[in-house]
Structures are given as structure tokens and as C-alpha cells.
Image (tube, rainbow, N blue to C red; front, top):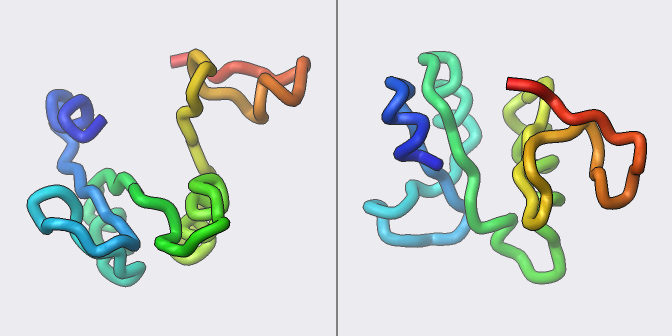
Length: 98
């Protein structure tokens, strides 16, 4: 995903709540994330919340709330494209175009 954004000229950061090698992802700090976004960078969150029993969907909404995001776009296994809701649970889900 990161390389795809960078191929089209978008500077991209990967951030994680889990401590991992800095070559893979930097530690998530919401103030840094907001700064990157204000500078026009793309930020990809990985690793969930770092706490057991919480889904990565929960992490996405938590991080979005912390940085003041207006929208969340998530790719899911077995779903082709991005929808306004879960197409597996909502037969009327609408797919976003390019």
C-alpha cells in the first residue's frame, strides 16, 4: 500500500501502536500524525490498538477520532473496493467509484 502511494508521488508514513523496528513502522503518536497529515502526507495505521480483544476496526475508529478524521476508508478481506458500509452485512451498501 505504501509503495503504491509513493509511486504516484505521495509521501507516506506507517505508524503502529505496537513497538516494531523503525524500518517497518514508527510508533503512533497522534500529534505527529496530525502534523504529517497537515503537511499532505498519507498515514497508514497498522497493528491494531496493541491490546488484546480489540479488532483492527476498533483501532481504525479510535485513531480516526484521535486525529479528528472526517472519514474512514478500510479495505477488508473478501471485499472488492470501498463501500459506504459493510457489503457483507448490508445488501444495499454502495460502492465508491475511483
